[in-house]
Length: 281
Image (tube, rainbow, N blue to C red; front, side, top):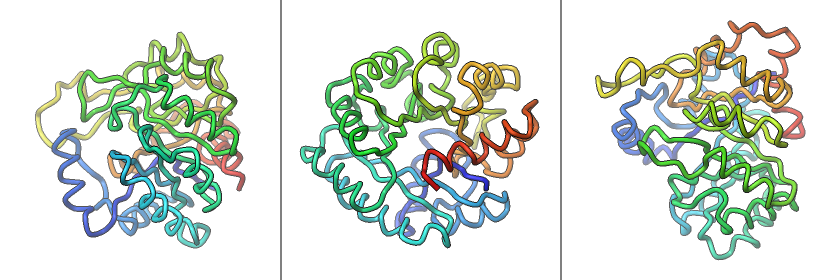
């Protein structure tokens, strides 16, 4: 079973405008139309069996509506192939009760995005969410490292992750973008010993720009050596395949992973086995 642990979709009514805005901010080409149907078409082309959709609440007022929508998307995930997580915003006043409601809705986890939400990962507002999610058995996926749309802004650095994990209770934590986008040297230095997972989203090979905004060096992400160094440091049992669709091609991302010097067992773990275990499938 091939599982893409890091994808995004938007409601069809706003998908085009949202994709246009985010593409302009990041100078990055989208590979789908941003809708659930567009993601399903991409999955069919890539041979992906299940995609985990990660919604982001950029304002506290969005939290409940997004979680209701996420539950609707996930209702028939075995047939539809889409399993949505819920969301939480660190400034949402009813965070304690809403996390319990997320659990009751059958959602398996939440997505945090410290950059979009303007709250550091080791801030007490985030720590309380990690604690509560851990109590409830919810998975927490967080954007980690720099963000392509906010140059120079880091609100989930490897240092912050290490500090947060020390302070928070046990929690199933996934650090997106190989532990910290473009902070990979520090990831290697500080994080391999922590009880966390990392995903491969938007971190391998080469970015696909829409214009000439970036230099050739800026377009290059992890090469094979850099990727394998991180896999060995964390262990293949803690690495999850993710594409960050629509911002990377699922097919190309999967082909890149398959071309790495991984054993069949390691490849099977990374492309689906680890995710299935974490999701309880």
